[in-house]
Every structure is written in C-alpha cells, then in structure tokens.
Image (cartoon, rainbow, N blue to C red; front, side, top):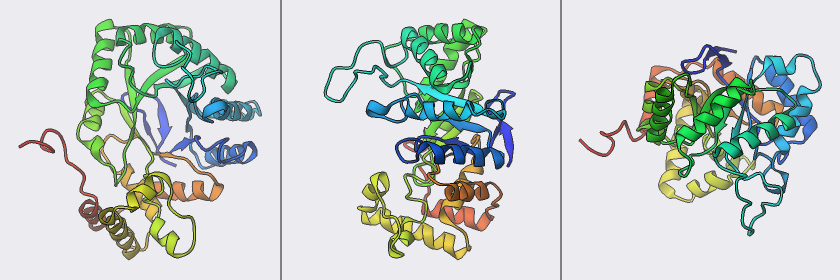
Amino acid sequence: MEYTQLGRTGLKVSRLVLGTMNFGPQTDEADSHAIMDAALDAGINFFDTANAYGWGENKGWTERIIGNWFAKGGDRRDKVVLATKVYANMALDAQPGRPAWPNHDKLSALNIRRAVDASLKRLQTDHIDLYQFHHIDRNTPFEEIWQAIDTLVQQGKILYVGSSNFPGYKIAQANETAARRGGTMGLVSEQCLYNLAERRAEMEVIPAARDYGLGVIPWSPLHGGLLGGILKKEVEGGRRASGRAADTLKNPTARAQVQAYEDLVDKHGLEPGEVALAWLLTRPGVTGPIVGPRTAEQLESAVRAVELELSEELLAGLDEVFPGPGPAPEAFAW
C-alpha cells in the first residue's frame, strides 16, 4: 500500500479509503469485521463512515459495527485513521412523513456537540481523527460552526475537520472564516463525487480544495457500478445495473460511452473497475478514492488498482471517452 499526506496536514493516510456504508444494510457484522481486518492486512489505514449509515430506523448501525470491531482489541483503533460525518437528523423518532425533531440535524453548535458524543459512544472510542460536515448548512454561519469545532478540538474529541459535498465557494468561505478566527486549521479535506463519468468537480471544487490545501477524497469512484464492467456483466448474466448506473444506461448515448470505455480497457487487457480507481490516483489533489466493498474479493480488486500504472496512451483514450468539462471559467465561458 502507498501512503500520502492528507492535504496540508502531517497525517499519513493510505491511497485507498475503506468506505463502510454497506456495513449493516448490505454486509452483516461478521463479514464487515472480516473486511476491516483484511483492509488492515492490506495496509489500508483510512476508514470512512457517517453517523447516518444504516439509514432510516437503523441509522447509527454502521458506527456500532465499527465500534464492536474496535472493541476486539489488537491495536485496531490505534492503526486506523477514523473519519465520520455529521449532518443527518439522528433523532430516534425522526421518520419519513413526520416532521423532523428540531436541533438534531445539520451544523448548529448544539447538534455538532450532540452528534460527536453520540458517534464516540457508538464507535467505542475517545476521539475521531477526521470529523466531516456531510453537507452544507445554509442557515448556520461558519463562525458558529468553528466555535463548536474549536471546543471539541480542545477537549480532544476530534483532531481534524473535513467537508463533504461542498461547492468551491463554501470551501473558500469555511477556510477564510477559520483564518479570520485564528488558531483554527479549517477544513483539511473535501469528500466529493468524482470519477471518470462525473468530472464536474474539476471545474471549481478541486481547484478550491488544492488552493486551500485540502485533500480530495472521491466517493462513488465507480459511479454506482457504471465503471465496473457493468455491460460485460450483463452479457455474462451477472449482476445487473441498478440505481444511478441503471438510470444512466437508459440513455443510448451514455450506454455507448460506457461500452467504449469497456472496449478501451479490454484492449489494454485490464479490468474496468481497477482502471477507474487507478485513474483517480493519477489526478492532481486526490488523496485516495473511497472503496466500499461488500466482499473480500472486491477489496482485493481495489487494492490491485494502487499498483496499476496507466500508460499515456490509455490515459489519452480515457480523456477521449470521458472528456470532462474542463476548469472554470473556461468550461462555460471564453
């Protein structure tokens, strides 16, 4: 496994991030524990979760699975750079169709304090290494957010702070506010949707992250399975597309694009999913993509991508198939 600094920090993290969103809903606790053990064995030290994972009435389920894994000992907690998130409504009686209980979601100082303590309890740990804002909160000023964060850092409950799904201007607002306050590191990472098929982050999010020293952590690196050889799997009678991938493939132009991608990768004798991950590792500013394996075999495939070197010919071909929008403002102006 290769390691890199997380943005402008001194923190060393693996170039693959273990995503845990499937733990609970898709992967039972025993298999989830086995995958985390295998990740450590492969040298992956960066684990990502969120307080809402488990979803609905099971929100918090994933953090509890991770906490039970930490409780097994064996220096598991010490070896892991642990990242979780805050934003979703975690009130126990918050159900679809009912009004959400106030002050149990988003980024108010009250909810941040409450959410951190609840995550620490579920995770069975005394601190969170990277605490991430899962979404922007248009109603809470960054002065309030950083005041809450500063207190938690002083208490030793969190070490670093990151964002997720932030537009470029919010990254700038957050870190300019932190700079004015003084004594606050501000955001050190941005977790965004970024992959070969979805490159809009290159317009403003990634440039903002790089200018402010944030490590970029792409989520959905295979775009919901679209870049994992989905058409070949359909022909072979394997897993069919679902969710975002299925919706995309309904468009004939997009389907032809995915077919061109699979043909290009096949020409080079490589696996589509591994190429998609390896491509992200070549992108400026990227710390490492989040991989969310449901099985140990999927984890092994992701690890192989770290050692994969893409030729200049293949990289040029990928840009032809998925050209991306280009940087702002040239993407939409002269």
